[in-house]
Length: 74
Image (cartoon, rainbow, N blue to C red; front, side, top):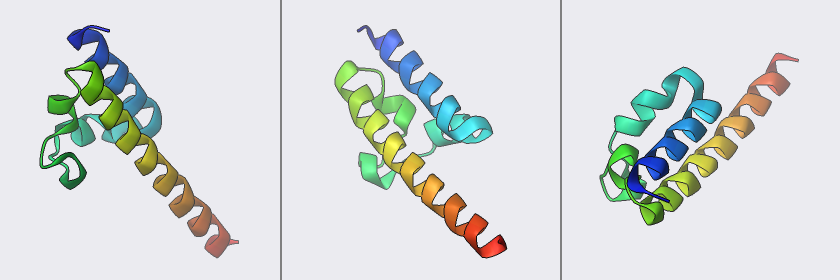
């Protein structure tokens, strides 16, 4: 996987999971990424794997939050 392919893959997954928030998430420095923005780290295949891992963890947290909000509203 080339540098460009790695970044494109991460951006596509971020859009799928985060929707309109994806571009902000990609450019905002992350404590979990040692202060780097996901877009900075995702320029290598290894970095892309790390970023995808963080993105999927965030996705899990988002799903849990949405479920709790729905349960409260019911």
